[in-house]
Image (cartoon, rainbow, N blue to C red):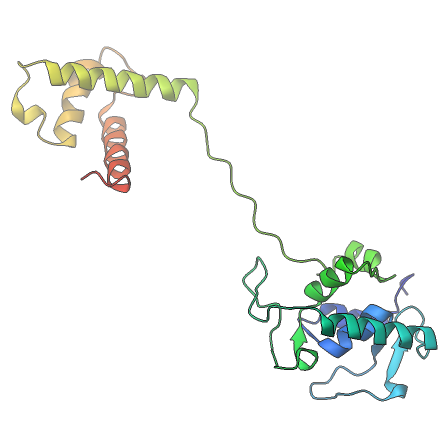
Length: 218
């Protein structure tokens, strides 16, 4: 048995949504003992304290009514979605209190009202999805190493020479394959493993052409 919640409560922690009224009860420290769809509202004998399984206290019932009033008076956007793309209110109703809400949103909203359920830290520690989903961190762009930069500069230099050399036949400049062949035969042999092999040059020229298209240059 957990220290701050009884085992039976874990089924509610696994659910994808709670009825808003039920969420207010859970935030106040008690929960319904039945989770079958369509069973709502709950009678008094169907409610238990999250911490010990006993009937809710008068203080918890009072806290539930307070949370209910706060939630109802607040502004909630039914159409909002979490960072995972799932709606925060899976089933919305003109009466917000008759909607269903994702547990993570209800808990996040409660935190904004300085409501901290006693069971929350333990549920988080046990890996239950009690926090709002986070966007995946942006992957850091790979930075070119010194050797790769040197190869790029070397290729640019060779291409500049080819543009200025009027003796090079037109057929050696007509496409990427011809250019790569010329570079490999005239420079690559003397500078092995320097980024001037035919396959490497073809790949580099293809990537360069793709980049120009992305920039709107045809």
